Length: 154
Ligand code: CTP
Ligand code: ZN
Image (cartoon, rainbow, N blue to C red; front, side, top):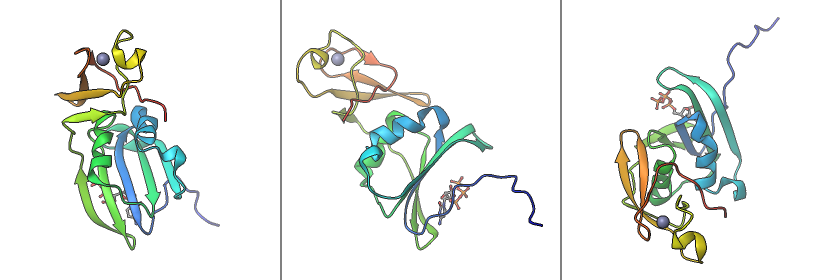
């Protein structure tokens, strides 16, 4: 009789991108940032998986898709500690760290309800501030700091 499986794993992919070490609480924000809800690629998502270094982590595997660095760096808003693995023919051919972008345009919402970007049709624009593991956003328009990333809906 087959041994009982004690570990749940997300299957390996042949080609594509694996985003690993995503804090579990940030997983769905990363899905939003990369607009994966509108992707037609095969995607597998694991959340609340055990991690030695992180407590509970999330993982996203996107088959047959390779992102521009600029797109990947946006993940810093929600998960600066995530790692990006590029998979080709089942092998990890590259491991990338995420670089925090200097500016963030049109992805995040300003937390200040009085901000012009929340009252008129003005694209949001922020400078990033690194604060320990977190990335905060300084609004170009109202100069208020947004502590927690709020995605703009697509
Ligand atoms: N992976 C995958 N498909 C492959 C190869 C790897 O989905 N064909 C995934 C693994 O499941 C893992 C990630 O890509 O989540 C990185 O793989 P690897 O570097 O082999 O794992 P680790 O050594 O655990 O990575 P790290 O040191 O970054 O924790
Ligand atoms: Zn603002």
